[in-house]
Image (cartoon, rainbow, N blue to C red; front, side, top):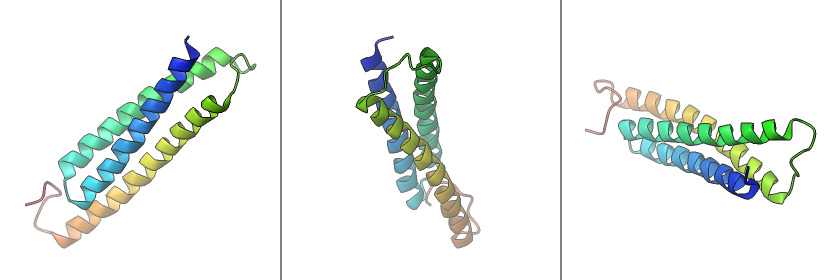
Length: 114
C-alpha cells in the first residue's frame, strides 16, 4: 500500500463528499429537488469510498501501531469526520427545506421549481 497516495485519496474523497453535500444544500434553497437528490447520492458515494480507504488503513494497522500516525494522517481523518458530520447535518436541513416547501406550495409535489 502506497501510504501517501492512499492518504491523499482519503482526503480527496472526503473533500468531495463535503462539497457535494454543501452543493445539495444550495440546491435545496432553490427548490431544485432532483438536483438535491443527485448531489446527496454523489456525496454518499464519495463518503463510501473515503470510508473504504479508512477501513483499509485500520485493517493494515491491525490495532498495534503498524502504520505511523503523522500530521497528514490526522489531517485526512479530520477531513473524513468533517465530511460525515456535514452530510448528516445537510440531510437534516434539507428535510426542513422540503417541509417548508410543502407548506408554502401545498398543491405541488416536492419537485423542480415551477
